[in-house]
Amino acid sequence: MPSAAFHAERRSALSAMLDQPVLLMGNGRQARNFPANPLPFRQDSSFLYFSGCALPDAALLIDGDQHTLFLPTPGPGDALWHGPTPSLAALADRYGIQTAPAEELEPSIAALARRPWSLAVSDPRRTALARRLTGQLLEYGPLNGPERLIEAVISLRLTLQEEEVAEMRATGAVTARAHRAAMAATRPGRHERQIAALFDGVLAAHGLGTAYHSIVTVRGEILHNEGYDNILEEGQLLLLDGGAEAASGYATDVTRTWPVSGRFDGRQRAAYDAVLAAQLAAIDRCRAGVRYRDVHLAAGAVLTRFLVDEGLLRGDVDGLVERGAHALFFPHGIGHLLALDVHDMEIFGDRAGYGAGRRRSSQFGLSYLRLDRDLQPGMVVTVEPGFYVVPAILADNDLLTRFQGDLDLERALTWTGFGGIRIEDDVHVTAGDPDVLTAGIPKDPAEIEALVGTGELRLDG
Ligand SMILES: [Mn+2]
Image 1 (cartoon, protein in one colour):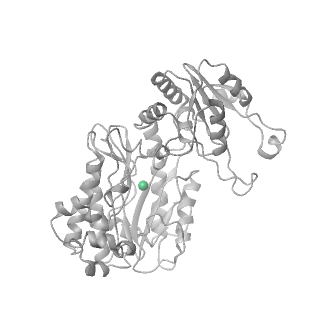
Image 2 (tube, protein in one colour):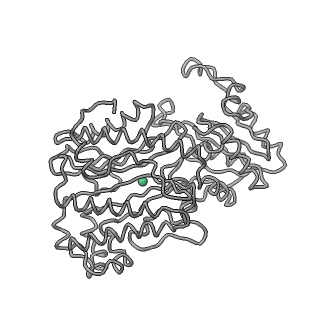
Image 3 (spheres, protein in one colour):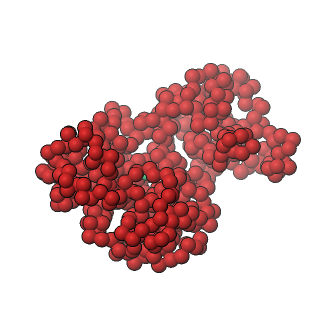
């Protein structure tokens, strides 16, 4: 877990970049349907990054080398309902920072020579407080604070320190156990819900939650399928996109796809091999100085070779990739930044994913690319190509007209019901070779076939 010294150093780095006090708001508890029934609490990621504090209703004021964590004073019934609250002195010790009661935040800001800059957070009540205390126009979304503050936060969070990478590697190892258990427990007649519960349960048995709602589906062509409504049938592929979140907030994000029966059929194996080859080629490109869009296009070229070989597309590979024809079967981007947020810093819109002078393409497929920076040592990115047979795409008149010469629609329709394959790993960019943080999770087809169906629905995975 990143240490108190790490957070202190990050605060000093932020302070050195700005001639300006900064107020960072932590989130509060948000009601699920009424206040006493709150949603599971998640701290704001920038707040975590600069404080390490995951307590609700906290605030952090950075004024030069004066850093203070303001914490709520427990109410009269709190000890009864929520247990004892550690003293401010004990919390100062835990977080390695001076602490003060929340009541002192407003007078402390009033005493500053300049009003601090702040950022909106996902909790509207806390954003409203930041707005009132700073007089800024803060609105949760891509424009949620002063440009210079957002840019400074992005530049610090963009490349990870060793302690952060170690945390993600450890979380990746737990994620590996959950993926293996899910593969082993898969067999025809079981339910998506059972596999999803097992996956989340193995993480919980290791003391961790999920970083996002796990996708567990035989309808892999529905990219962010949320439901668990299907019984697993012989001949289907099961796609599982899930990852653990560390207690410190760092995420893993891993997808594997395997045959329910434990054996890929001919088409499944051909498509699987192509997605895997695309993924390996893309991972190999995750090196310092490489433009991330080129990682995406490298995977696209490998997939396009397969699409042409299968007769789904026709023409030369380079031309097809340039026109984006492969997006008919690989409609999303190759991946995104990963750290404290699963799509790291997407709270700032495209600012984190697209550096100065770069914008999203308007081309079908490329328009869903969430990241297009030049890779730097210390960045962690996902690499997640896929192959999907999406009925909505094969019935989209605009797309069918645009790619009329490229697509063999009749042949494509014979693949209806195939579903989808995605293979995703988390890659740490270094000064040398790419460092795959989630390498312990089977993706070799023979290894997967040997594992599927060999286990029970047990939480000791
Ligand atoms: Mn992902």
